[in-house]
Image 1 (cartoon, rainbow, N blue to C red):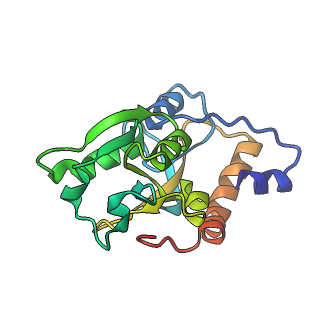
Image 2 (tube, one colour):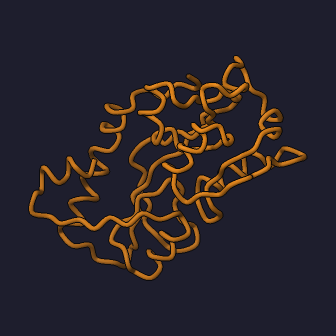
Length: 200
């Protein structure tokens, strides 16, 4: 989506900073960002959060994992395996923890990582299960390197948002990027990710 924007506006220079939800909220609060792109908009500060595309999240395993062979995986079965999770402060981690609140014994998190790419590598290596945005898994799913587990009530559907501070006056370039994402985001995701199946 950013590449498409750059083709339309080749004279605009972008600075992209990756961070978890708590980092982005702090940077927005400090007025250090023009725009933030996040799945779970902040309630901690007054912010303009505009949804632009569907955002599915689900449970993933390596293709040889025993749960990946089942036609249905009940939630309590997930607690019996080691987990690789995003760090505290991540919106993905918070959503995973809310999903597991109904369990008497929460799953054992054996490793925390700040990178979805590192988590995918660990899951592919058989180190545990994880909960991730399905938009991060397109290539690995196509190549059969990761499987989305058939857990009831998943994928969990959220929305991607473009977030800004209502008191910050955006530059013409930042306003053009905001408009581009709002106008093209849904179409772009549909084109590159298609309909997200519940399981593989």
